[in-house]
Structure formats: structure tokens, C-alpha cells
Amino acid sequence: MKKASFPFRRIFSPSGRNYRNKFSVFLVCAAISFFMWSLIKLSKVYEAPLKYKLTFQNLPTDKILVSAEDTVITLYVRARGLELYGKLFNTRKNRINIDMSDIRLRRVENSYRGYLRTSRFLKDIASQLPQDNDLLGVEPDTLRFVFETEYQRKVPVIPDVSLSFVTQFKLYDSLVLKPDSVIIYGVKSILDTIHKITTEHQSYKYLKEDRQVALKLINPRTKPPITLSDDSVQVEISVERFTEAEIEVPIGIENADKKAYRTYPDKVTLTCTVAMREYERLDASLFSTTIDYKTAIALGNKLAEVKVVRQPSFVKVIRIEPEKVEFLILK
Image (cartoon, rainbow, N blue to C red; front, side, top):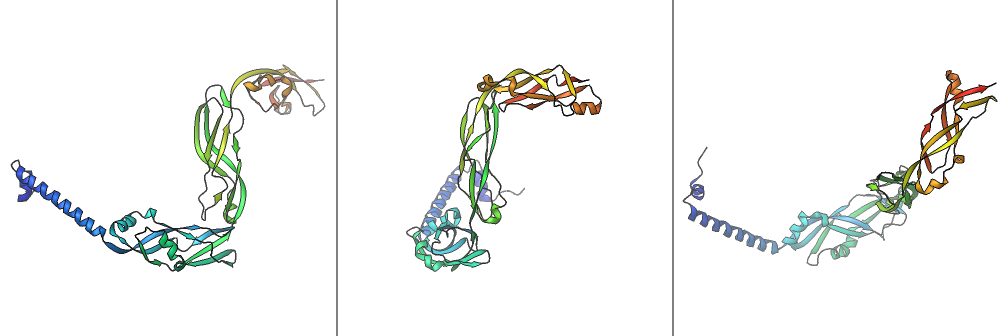
């Protein structure tokens, strides 16, 4: 390995303390000099081209902007160096609003075309620049646009939520959305492909009481973009304590072939879950069961499966005892 040159050996040598102090003073002076030089340079006035992103206001009624040849324009600006460097390196804040209320459109097949001369907006553009900036010119000199007719359509909102509950608690009813649908606006070719709008995903854990939450709607990424009549919905989560209940129900038999059948036993016990607020409504008359004797006969079985053919909407049958019963054909 080559030895360091003489000045650097003195800096790092144990006896070079005095030299290190002098070198540190030199670096500080050099830094101050560079800083002062930079301030002098940046305080001077320069001319430079700056890129600005366009945003459009007051678009034609019932029209959608589907194409713009230029969404970024170049402004030739005279300003102090410090401000110019700030805009060159932080272009996200460089935006110019263009008022399109005076644009004239002509129909070309299924679209509408128009243009604007940037020379008409020089004063408006200059007013959006800092006061000490002078606008010297704009490129391009013409902005061209293509529009299509705006359509609207109503689509349902689908909530994207994950729910978990404290033991014995469950969702009492389906989620209630307000509003449960939204109107989407855009060009017809895109609206025809959108059949629903979903919410942002959210998880709610250990629920044991009702909740009402606001969920943002996800706007599909389309080109050109669509707009929604609402940007969020209210979601009502109805939570209730559930319990298990047993109820004895007689077995019914559909007598399609005019023969007399009898089952043994003639009743089954249904175990179901029911919300506590609905428990008093539970009654055997709300249930109907039958047996699939035709399948049993075809298979040569003496046991037929029991099926629940009617039950109230506020319960869920989780078990049938017995699941199969013996049936007899009476002569």
C-alpha cells in the first residue's frame, strides 16, 4: 500500500496537532467563502425555462376531457437564482390553472375537438407566478383538446370489511350502507365496464355492540377518469348476542305418489342459533321438515335423510337430530 502524501501524513500523525488546527481553520474559511459566493450568485437575476403541469377549470358542461396533447407547458421566466433553483428541483408544486370556459368545440364523429392559444392566457399565467417573477414566453403556443359526451350510471356499493366478534356475538343483520349505491360519471365505453364500486378495506375485531363507520369509496383507475357522486358511505354494523335453542318439530311427508308413509321417530330436534332479541318468537310452527324417501327407495335404503324445508329468517339451523329416520310404507 502506498504511503499517504506529505500533507496528509502530517494531518494524521500524532505530532501534527498544530497542523490539524490550521487545516480545520482553512476548511471553515473555505466553506464560508463558498457559502458567501453561493449567496451572491443566487441573489442575481437569471432567465430560465421552467416546466409547469396544467390543471383545467370550467370544462364544458356534459363533456369529459379524454385527451390533451399538452398537459405540461414550458414557461420562460426571469427571476432570482434561489427561486429558480427551488422550482427546478421541486417541480411537484409547479402548477398552472387554465380556464376553459371560452373554448369552442367542433364535433368530429363521436368526439368534440377544440384548442386554446396560450397567448390569450399570458396575463392569467403571469398572475399565478410569484410577484418578483417576470414571464417572458410560453411553449407551446397552442393547446389542443379532445372531449366526449359525459354519461352517468347508477351502480351498487360493495363494502370490503372483515369482522370478528366476541364469543356469542354475531352480525345480527346484513350491513346497511347509506347510500347503498352511487352515480358514476364518465364516457360511455368506460361506464359500461363498471358494475360496482367497492369501499376501502377495513377490519373490525372483537365486536360486541353496534358500530357505525365511514368508509371511503375506491375510484377505479380509468383513462379518462370517472367521477363519483359520493366519496364515502356510512356503514351500519348491527351486532347482537346469539344463543343456541332446541325445538322439536314433526316430520312431514310429501305424499306425491298417493301412498301412506310413516317415520320413526315422527319428530326431530332442531338445534339453531337465534339472536336474544328474537328468542321469544321461536316456535315449532315456524318450521317444516320432510324426508327424501324417493332417494332412499331408489337406493334400497330403509333410512331417509331429514331436510328442513321452511324456517324463519332470524334463525340458523346448525344440527338435526336424528339426521336420518326410518320410514315405512303403510299398506
